[in-house]
Length: 306
Image (cartoon, rainbow, N blue to C red):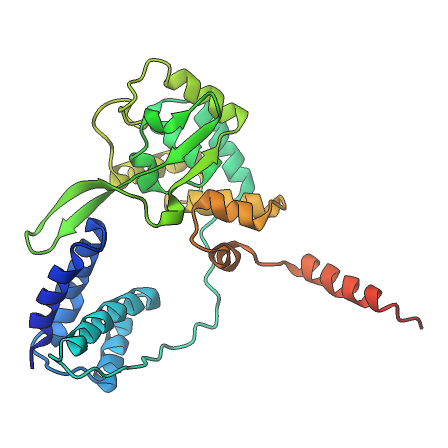
């Protein structure tokens, strides 16, 4: 039998050839921050132990999704140990308190979005350009920070999303570094069409740019997500618009598409979602008028007369 800590070391080594570096560092951080301090010396992990662990994390303020992600890593390590016959595999089911109030996505009000986009067009520079692109395409902040001029096809009006940038923390070395690699999933590698306004702006800024220069800096050195997020914070504060995380721009783009009756599958492909169900679950929420129309349409189809 081996301890959870010993198994985790072997598991991480075996994972290296098969996952992205960012994913590997995320696993490492989860192990060092949550699982090893709790279970490092354990040679077995029961359902009762994991249930108690999850409730403690919940009481400490962690979100349910974060806790589920932690438990998923623990489960992968234990299953690996069972295949190697180093630990007994115990399949656990951890229950979470039911969330009665549905979580609402952070989305910018349409009036505020119009005001922000007018401001960006009136004060356009390399830094403001990325915010405008995100509101116009739904690109993730890491994808924007990694965007180079070679990814923009002015002639055909397309932006190719081929890479993403993130700051990765190495919990063993206790330092972080900038990492540029493939996007989040295979579906995230995509082409996004540009509208006329964005095409004109990008054509102007990219006229004398080098192909390998980053769009947000117009130079060889990129900006990183947390720095660029602070730039958005300053603009929103200046305009008196409620604070919104950068990912809220992506949600705002998708919401505007759905509000204007864009095809759900097309929106899903533009966003780079792995499945249509992700888009439907996040953005398709019929309001009262839509539900009334649906019921009335069904009733009329029955052709029942008084």
